[in-house]
Length: 293
Image (tube, rainbow, N blue to C red; front, top):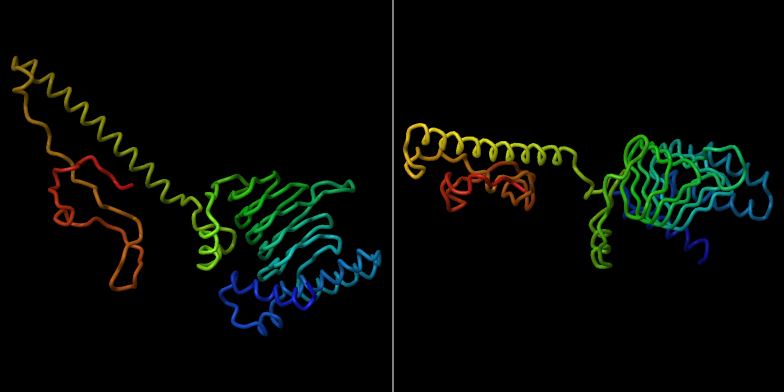
């Protein structure tokens, strides 16, 4: 591939990851992340030719112009995109695969003073969120997402999402077909390293609260049945003539916190609520123990 084709490939890759990009000329003139990659290719070639001092000078000029520091010896794959870029640091023995994305404030650094491999290796399609620190000679598998401001010190298996300090795995991306991958790429890009299928902590808390309420309802129903049985025994009446059961709880069937069609805001809108019981075709007494899923 010729240098011009590589430049065109770099520019075109931005359109799938930055919705603010409008045309190729604007990207070529105003995107410091692209400029830093181009400067690095020159510095890396000089480093390969053992013109180490000149390579470091070129890398330092790039740092002054873009705010992005990349060691000339670092290996960077095709279509790598550094968005915004200010404060990004990439160490000497770092290796970055194809189609990776780094946001501002990212550090691919080392944790030891000894020579040799001491910086991270990123697989293909890795996204590192703003302010994240990936430290040490660790390996991130293909498709890994590192959340903003996370500190990653251990290897990450492919397709995982990591957040926190120290970073921990919070989600595993499901395996998808090639057609699904193409559709996902066409629909958009998961910005700042937060995937759309990443677990929602609010939804998880609500789900656990609903589970707790359901368990409490079951326990109360069991206790009420025992109290009625004891009342019947104390009154000397048979079990079948015991007082009737308590009125059922209002049904939660159809209640949701999901997205649904809306004639006001468009084909899809975030809605919260419960439909009238008439729409469900049953009375409030039916399906009293159901809950949203």
